Length: 142
Image 1 (cartoon, rainbow, N blue to C red):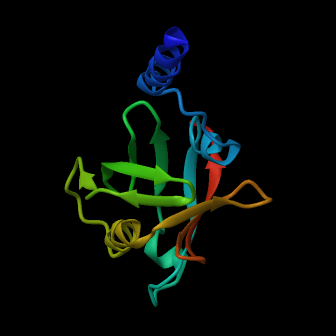
Image 2: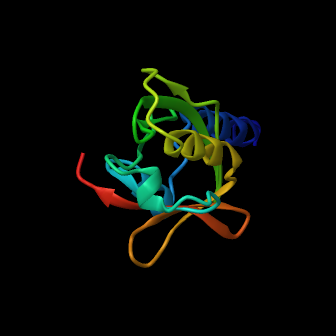
């Protein structure tokens, strides 16, 4: 009986320490692809006017819990956290400092505001504020 009392806590600690929390299929879909922005809510400037040459791209890296990509002009990276359907991003840091209009600041500002994510039936990533889609991305080859 004493061995059983010891075995359960020891086994529990071993499982917890391994950190092997299974990821949901929705979360798994975030990784291994680049996501190109195709919709941004908020700015009064037309989407094509914000990004005439290059659309923002985001990629999620599970091992480092960082996103990286291009804001439509400059590169950036930031930490992110997931908790179920909740998502948050750390302060995005550009890697270069070119000015390319208003699109990139709008994109980075919205990244800091979103708090949820989802992947719709068409396989598109939606970053939302509560239940309202604010940014929509389509998958593209890396």
